[in-house]
Length: 192
Image (cartoon, rainbow, N blue to C red):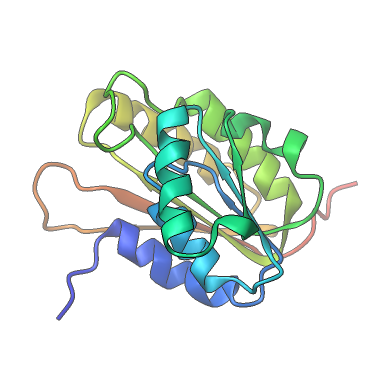
């Protein structure tokens, strides 16, 4: 039996939505694994946007996509995910966030809570009905714990009539395992 961690659960939960997606965001390209997963599970004519502030991350992502034949459908953006609405002016079907630092990279360069929340706010406002956003957070180190708390607070404030928010975790694992937040848009904004 496969042990399912937060990253794998995010893929399981978002996969069905990707099958008909036109526009998907990988808000944290990192080493390209989520970007490749998205590209491999979306229609050929869809557009995948992958953001990262580190050129090293985008280089690894580009190489992985090229090796697997998906480089033409992905737009790599060397900028903060906090600027997502600057780059994407259309509806978004799904998005994935994998917070923290670049695996194998500098631990001093992390996703920042204010940027993550800005990106989430923009993506959620452009998210289609039944669109899904997954966020994997890492409370096992000080910065990750702070970011998780701020993201959790933001998600808890989302209007229940517009978004359904859930949290998934491995409850019997040591060293504060990653948490997965799942957001689904269930209706349009009903406020005037």
